[in-house]
Amino acid sequence: MGVTTATVRLPLPWKGGQDKFFYWSDENPKAQVLVGPCGTKVGKSFGCALWLAKEALLNSKSFCVWVAPTYLKCKIGYRYLKAMLDIESVAKCVDGLLEIRLLNGSFIKFLHGRDAEITIEGEAVDRFIIDEAGKINKQVWHSLLTTITQTGGIGIITGTPRGFNWYYDVYRQAKSGNPFFCHVTLRTEESPYVKKEQIERNRRLIPKALYDQYYNAMFISSSSVFGDLGNIWDETIVIPEGPVRFWIHPNEAARAMDIIHGVDIAKKRDYTVFFSVNTRGQTVGYCRFKNSPYPRQAQRLQQYLKSYFNKATDNLVRYDETGVGTALGDMLADLDIDASITPVTFSNRSKSEMVTRLTLAVEQQWLKAPRIEQFEHEMASYEMSVTKSGLHSYAAADGEHDDIVSACMLAVSAAYQHSMAEEAEKMMEEAMGGSLSIEDDDIIEYAKAGFDDENFFEDGYDDDKDAEFEFEGTYG
Image (cartoon, rainbow, N blue to C red; front, side, top):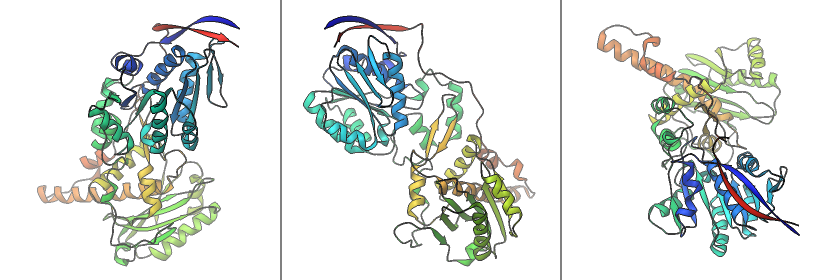
């Protein structure tokens, strides 16, 4: 047996933010849990990694866990800690298992999904991180609470707020003065990684509820990207329980107006979805299926329009031409379809525009739809993320589908824009006795709001600013 001393250099946390994570247990020795809701791009995961690295180094033979909702989220924490600790005389990192074993006997395990709950229940946890807590099942927290109550373990619960769930409950307990907890809130405006003008521009562009959640780290009643979905359901329409693959509005008059059809084509494991909305905001048709060859998908769209929307004043088909969608356009051109066909390329910019219009349609209760279970689930699960350059990205949560949302955005964004343009034109004609072109309408300019590229902000090491911690490790 030999004893060696190694010097580990850790980057300093930025003052006024990450240092609140790094030093929390020193400044609050009686608390066992720090609850830290954060805005986007404040470097919370990096700050948590710094704290966990310090604790694992200075507390030999400690069992540490990092819990995140998905494997990819776990890898973020693992990557940070590996960069800090992957030194031959200090630790051994096992990439395939997401494990780090320190020579002082400490062990760091990264857990996600069902594995987190099962593993935590059978272990005596000394230090922990729960990252993106709003997306993690409350049973994980209950299991962890049981073990740290026995061991006296300490840790951090953090992430962007997401509705009123268990994460909100523990934050409320911390705010009320429960000595078991302490708390800190970091807003994006405090971060050195995002330009202030970028934050201000996004504040003007995105809905207030989203801004408060993602930038001000506030818990809001509805965590959906699109706001309070309770505003859109037409409860007069009775929908059977379980999966609904096809639905047509029973009122023929609602299907005889101008109709915009959003079409999202299946790619591998995904679903093909038709979503139809008239210019009054009524959802008038829905179809969802999979495992169909592309020519058959085009033929089904042709039959869908011919059978149920042949009396529409005008039919406009908007389809996602990204990837295989280009082939669909060629197939539709060869079919006898009584509709205007418009391809739409999905990008961060175009998605942001469509999300903005769909959100406005939901907030203003303009959109009405039957309460189809899978549609509601996809709308509630759709997520916004913010890149390091401050740009917005929209997609389904990991492991979820967003085919219905994509088709819905294609249809509703155009229908809503058309409706608002007509309303604005009527108002201006009444006020001025003239006409107003769509291009001159401020409402449309707002609906077209996009995002420009910004410089890349790197969140990570600063080689010129290092703190040193020493520990003694024992060779076996």
